[in-house]
Image (cartoon, rainbow, N blue to C red; front, side):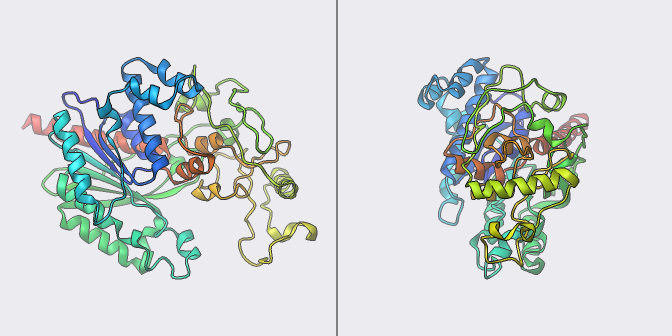
Length: 424
């Protein structure tokens, strides 16, 4: 933690790898705590917390040494105060655990002299609300306990009474259980003392080269003169190839962490790639030769006239699935020459068929780093865990460029409140 006078403090719940938190870090908010149940994502959060501490103390060479593999994680931690690492709480949020989490957060605040929480951010896991999740569950996620995680979120609001909160989720949250859950969420959040509004936003409105639709609920304490802030939209003259072409061509199963081109305008303006970056995670999964044959057909159809391949377009000898009436778009090429790609999902951890690289010469699925870039993660963001775990973290994340816009707007609104208070 880096507490200073007039610092805005936040708690991140259901943090994942920290995509939403990245925006608040970038706008000088102080992280009191991140709470995340997944062990690999928690390790990623710890590593990123080290990055920000070392950046602030002008010791980024230590972080780069870690990315190069010349020092271990334990040696990295030796350069960082324990209280920075301990801001990450690896715990499920549930009826059984929330009191213990309160105790840990209270101890962090007392140790660091933090007296208040300005913002709580985060969004419960979205599988129970998503249309895809409901379609894949025989009961439509009716009995999924994740439907009720908003109750845990409200407990943290009631306990710490932040000035504002940011609750991010999928649009399906509005229609889950025929809208009943959304009504309950609104009622619960208002009951603990907040006015709320929501907006539907698209990641590409914030410079992310991806068409990702999300719901952003923002609440503010009823006793404060606050409003839903306006998010600043940005637009870049870029295509998806601008985040692919400076990376080395790969064959399936190959890794190459050397840049293969210069920094272009998009990468520089967004900060996705910076001078002296150490490239990591440009690795891709192995692909069966028969799937590569299918990939070639899908790539050629897309690159010739932007036609999406249907499974039934394949020659009979390449059709191995019995189901030829649904999920016909199970092979999908990333839109390299378009201003944004289709939505990056955690399903990429299971197979890469829905995220095929547009270069027919490579004929493979996306690498971990390419997926991270589509989500707008900077190249200096390192994901802990095996490749599958990294794909899950990336697919579930809030795109950092979108998070930047949210954090900037929240900061402006809180600063406006403070200025008005000082003038009265």
